Length: 218
Image (cartoon, rainbow, N blue to C red; front, side, top):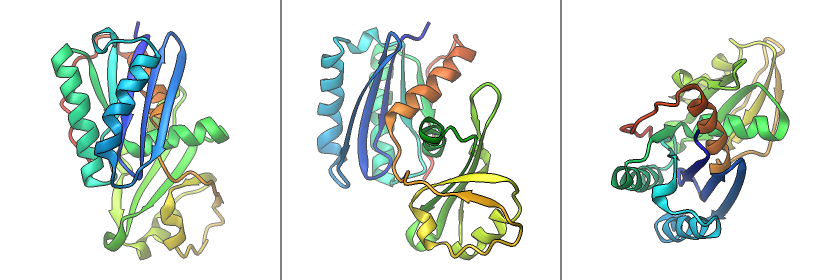
C-alpha cells in the first residue's frame, strides 16, 4: 500500500510540502511569491527529517503540474521528477485546480466547484470540477483560459449550486440569467495537503502506478 507519499506545490504565490506517513499528514506552507527556489528544497528536507523518512522510503511523489506561474510549475515538476527518477519512485502530476477543488471539499464539503484565476492580460484561467461517487474530482478537461467577458456565458450554461474558488472572481462582473447559486469562499492558493488526498485516492485505484512523464499546464 502507498503509506508514504510526498507532495510538492509551488504553482502560485506559496510554497507547500506535505508528507503522508501511516495515515498522518505533516504539512509545511509559506507565502513566498518569487522566492520559491530559495525556500522549497530546505522545506522538503525539513519535512523529511521531521517525519524521519528518507527519499528512497517513499512509496510515491506527487506535485502540482499547473495551471499557475510558469517558473513555479517548472520548479515543482523538476524537483519531483529528479527525486523520483533517482530513487525509482512512482510519480504523479496533479492539476493545481483539482487540488483546489479538493481543498474546497476539505473545508466546505462541496462537490461542485467553479475555479477562476486572474490570468492578467490573458483574462481568466477557468475550470469546472465535480466530485464523483469515488471521491475523485473530474474536470481537468474543462480547464481553459477565457476572456473575462466570456465567463458569464460559461456560468449561465450551468445549473444548481456551485462553490467558487480563486482570485479571478474580483474581475468577473457576473450577470445571473439562470438563477444559478454561487457560494463564495476565501480559497485563493493551493496546498500540497490536498495533493496528498487526491493522489492517495488515485493510488488506491491503481496500485501498479509507475513513473509518469508530467506535462506542465501553463
